[in-house]
Length: 344
Image 1: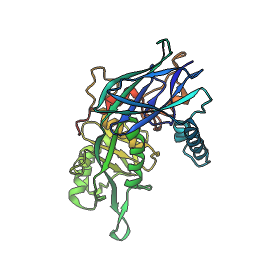
Image 2: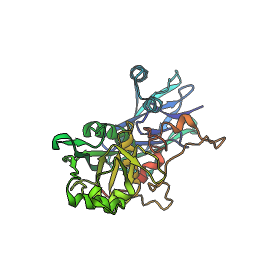
Image 3: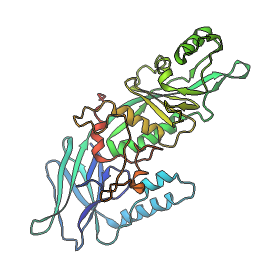
Image 4: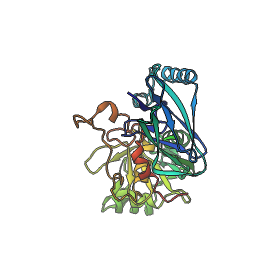
């Protein structure tokens, strides 16, 4: 059966959508496979909007083999492996490179069709060509008084801003044409030996005796958000605070947390590889202007089997915005929701 299929995972092609969807960064290109038994189908493009050309399948297959070998290493993150392991294509697959020509193509995208010589449509895909949107982000490891009055990290596992940024961009650029740019900032030193800070902390957590107040080992974001909001980085759209542990309203210890409306998120020592990217999704989703409110940052995605309507564990584990530990994949239909943030 003819169909358009994802080639390199997390590249901006969503083959589970009906019809599939494809994101292309303006000025760049993307690759899609066409399963074409008999190899007789012709692509029906809009020549004024897209440049579509068939490319060497042998070279693509060699690259896919290299990716599969790299992801098969035993120390590979299991969610990254699940979301990134490419399919194996047989001889029915053809490969096409698609590039935008002159302007952006917004959602729902431009329909590209594969037709028989007689004109019958056998497969279709929607293509969106999007200018890259840059989000300025700052990371602040939180510091507290250590031995000998030398500041120490609050987190047992402090973050590396470059590593966090690398993963965020590896997820968001190809799938949503959103990039994150680093705003340099210093670590946040909370000297809770100072009476003024003791009072701030006591007021935030509801302590009557401020003399015993210290920055909690577990940060209750709802209680402490006002305290941290004063320490957001000027010039950044989003500030990320790294602390040791977070406490939710239910008493749990999430890997990360987003503060709605205050343009800041928290990540903990227990964070996963893609926690910062996941929390950035909550931040961006807060600004969605969609009338359907498919995504407004309050909840999480859940992948269901279309036949049984039960959770499809094999697919759900791949998703960036899933509950219970962030994956790596962004579905096509959510991309517009995340791009409503008013940054240029």
